[in-house]
Image 1: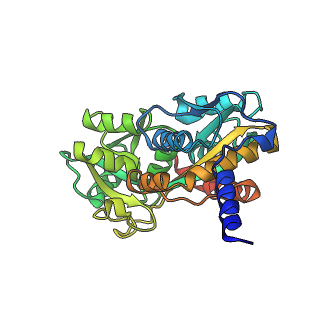
Image 2: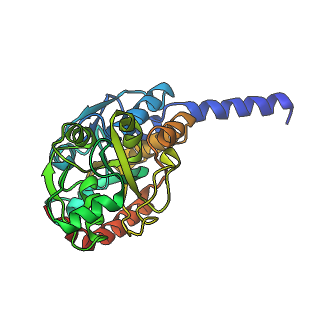
Image 3: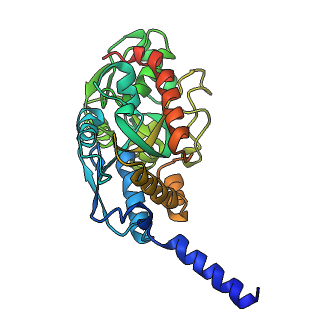
Length: 320
């Protein structure tokens, strides 16, 4: 084969790879896709979705736009239920964090991940315990010693039944006798506002949220991860400090149960391509402190099933 023919074939293949993915699924999508973000703007779930939405649009990975819509409330349950009850045609999708599994494990919802079609895993970030920079607690040990000595004397705020609730439950489990008084505020933005307004003392945040809020008076005390995060390398892990408190939050993409397999495959491939772009990888890492493990199909379903069983005994510590 001549060099000219080799180059022509290479260019044709590159063009095929860059083309929008639609023809293989009977011209799906032929209209905009509604993407439900089940939390208010300002948190890691919203930021993850917006980064991916921009990458899909800028790289022309779909012939139709994705319209991201925030439907907050009830720890993500309101938005999730909208997607669960939507027509299974591939035109309504959901990004959700570990809260779906947490709520299922704790029996807080009458539905779970099996009531959806899991599409693809998106990212993972470990939680961080944060307090006011001007407050009385300078270290994680000071905070935990105080709440053990006087249970329910320190107020935590966040989303009951969500990932930040799971994080504080893990903190309590790792410190026998610890018991924070818990109030429903909302996601990361609401927890941050609660700390700033002296409504609560403790909140749990993703690494990216800590990066965003740290300059505004938030003091991170410990990362609830297996190791320190490069984005906040000066913040120790709880394990380093002698507390076996580890919890990391994961985001996945879902579609309504019964969505055709061909359309699930289109969505999975679109998001796989978006996750592979340099811009998404950079923003997930540098802005959000996220790592990625891209799973689809049976591999993703197996991981979700394993994580649900892991969470079941842990949710016993989610007392209000």
